[in-house]
Length: 170
Image (tube, rainbow, N blue to C red; front, side, top):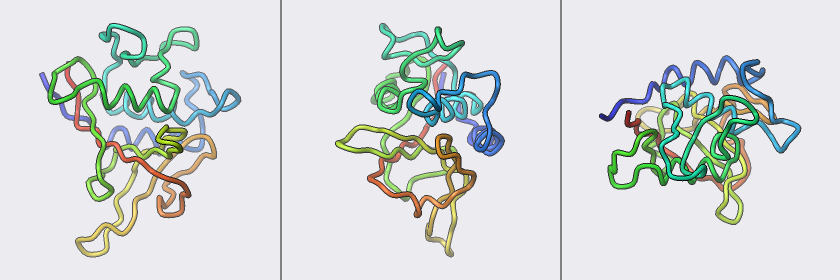
């Protein structure tokens, strides 16, 4: 059965922990950055269930401890591969359903990645859509690793990829 992603809960979590760390999770700042771990926590707070159903660890998404986690929970490119490949063409696999999106399709709770050579190296979450009339003029984002709270996306430098979280199967 398909369920809606709780975008507001994900954003509330992002705003709560953007400038701090939830002590329930390991902080990976000293091991390459905490951004994907933080974004995974946001999605989980938005009711996206941890996923053990894939036939290998690269097709799963979960975190219980530093020694019991998947690369997709903490690594930018594995996170992208999991999100985009978990449910293709409404395949109804357990867990998240997401797609690559255009800039003007984004809503709160969606993900922005910085990429280089078509590989993700950083993740951010949309926390607010800034409108000028009916037109999108900017988005605000939260992130860990160079912690930012409601920061204008327009000020971020680098090539971007946008991911729309459509919901999840359970």
